[in-house]
Amino acid sequence: MPQKRTVIGVDLPNIPWEDRPAGSSDPVWRYSKNPVIPRDAIPTSNSIFNSAVIPFNHKFTGVFRCDDKCRRMNLHRGESDDGLNWRISPEPIVFKGADPEIAAYNYGRYDPRVCLLEDCYYLTWCNGYAGYPTIGLAYTYDFEEFLQLENAFLPFNRNGVLFPRKIRGKYAMLSRPSDMGHTPFGDIFYSESPDLLHWGRHRLVMRPAGGWQSTKIGAGPVPIETTEGWLLIYHGVLTSCNGYVYSMGAALLDLDEPWKVRYRTAPYLLSPQKDYECVGDVPNVVFPCAALCDTATGRLAIYYGAADTVTALAFAYVDELIAFTKENSLC
Ligand code: BMA
Image 1 (cartoon, rainbow, N blue to C red):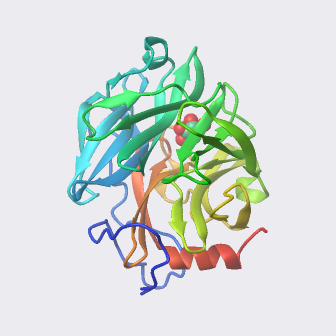
Image 2: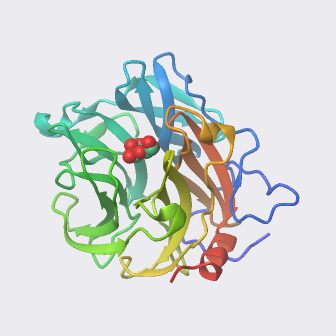
């Protein structure tokens, strides 16, 4: 078991964990009892997927994408003692603070990420504005009151993911400029801000590459700071004759200049192969949005949406993931 302290962060001995199945040498493996959150965990939900989870008060809290039975996309808070059994609030999060024009429910709120930055929890998500998708941003100290800021970018944009500390003295975010629909393109960009309101100095990070990541890519969980660079887990999309296929990969970004990609997986880490990933409201989707990491052991628990229907869990060791990414890199 790796014991080297590669991850810069805190010890989280209580994250969910299951050893790699006997006979497997894959760097990422699924929880045997997947999915961890069924589509109907609350009475009003059609589906619960693409959701964010973070340690909070020695337990876990999360912001969950719940699409309701009217098929409205919304964000709900959830709590868990063990990261496996979740109590999800039946009511969506109510955001305060923002200009009412920005805070209004408009087109939907979906695909949240939660980032601990300084002493505050920041939430990014795909937020409707003027009927178009862009990156919403809010903060909370207690997961009770959420204060919304201005949208980070102009439409059209998705997959906004904050870095967990300032870089070069600025807040930093990854995002994926897109279009109004089921975007058939998509590169990951890096942007910085002095105040989380004004974003600029945009830099290209990665473009789609071959195979499983040939159509578009988007950042997944908040990047994990390691001695080898920022470990970014991301999704990549292949256009098959049966539609899009969403898989998971990883990259190592330069610590000081994260728009410089040092390594990037040529093979996927996880692709839709289990029934709950292949069958659902949108078949063939593995969509990672959160990762919990225990620095002492290097254990990683990755939460991902499966088939736009349920939430599933996968595990890895950070050191193994870094080694795999370097040994199987596109660059
Ligand atoms: C993307 C987003 C995700 C979704 C994926 C697959 O464009 O809408 O929320 O998981 O498509 O449908």
